[in-house]
Length: 539
Image 1 (cartoon, rainbow, N blue to C red):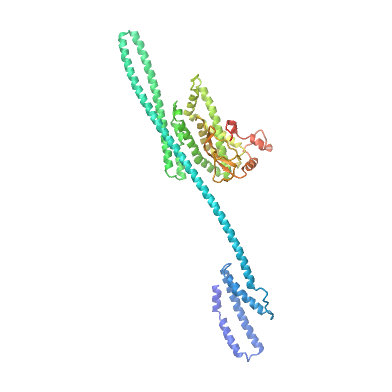
Image 2 (tube, rainbow, N blue to C red):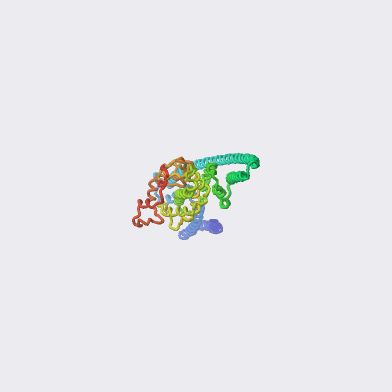
């Protein structure tokens, strides 16, 4: 626009137009009619050229102002001027006052546009209020999650304090046992010295044969006493090693809970360098007949903590591995939950078989003994490393391959979850050695959500009454929930679960039924062993 205006200013047409007007005024009376008309037309052409340039500048300036700038000026000045010009040139007809002018029309249009703009603003305000309401709901959910996290931290701190108190009690018992053994040893030495003196006096009175017989009996009693002392000493050493290992594990956990959370890489390195608490204790434990009775509560707390670590660490690692192949988070969480459930079922079967073999091997040594079952359980606890966990992992993978609830791409191999399945199998196997044993709660898609049994995931519908699918199983002891699981709740969860079950396909079909005859009933018969079949209660 500035260039066009500069050209108009630099043009001499306006100045020459003034000169032409003055010369025409001087010569008007002397010129003929044609000459005057020619002068007038020349001036009109020049004025038209100037108006063309001015309208071009006007158009450029209006475009630079945008959609709304300059609208009021055009309505208030240009349009009324054009209306007046066209009215004056309408063959002398008078202007009708009843006909609405262009200014009134544009005013009405402006009012309509302002009304539409007001409606748009009201709609935007309503959307903004709805968004704020959703934001408040999310903030409330975050506050509730923080409260749940604080409760979990408090429970873990309480369990840690309980374990420390138990360790202190075990230390006191160990010290008292050591003191009793020392006093007993001194008393036995004193008695043996008295016996030796009496035997010497008797040997002086008796003959050589009686002296030989008495000496042999004393030597035999000494050997038996020495064997008993050595056994008790080995037992005390084993208990000291167990307590020191548990103390080091609990101190490491308390230090990790007090220190700030490290980055994921350092956490992965520390997790790879140090094993889980119960694993570390199992490595240093040696056969001890009273260890199961002394540390039953401590082993229970350690296993629950290990199961919680598997949820917070090992499960997330398994999810990362599966998300490389599967984009849908729901399918990944279903696969991990089914893997955990199948691992518990297989570990329970393996524990029963292992217990039967131990009974057969210990029957000759404990025939007719009342402590036979305790001896079997102590042997299993002391020899947890004999559990064939790799065979259980293979059984779990085979059960998952024929489970109809998992829908996934064919290129996914469940061997990716071997480490996760191995950890859950070891935890489940060790939980069967407790008295009473721990087990997972039965869960079915579409069941009624139970606050005492599960907690909702962050992406759940908190008003839905039914469980859409499970994320993590709950732990129960004698039909009582002692550790909550996690579930996702949605509206219409039952019908969605039935529809997804009818659509899903299995990795490997049953050899009994061909592919063309697979239906919902045949799929339910070809799935992995049911939890009810292994004694899990219904809820």
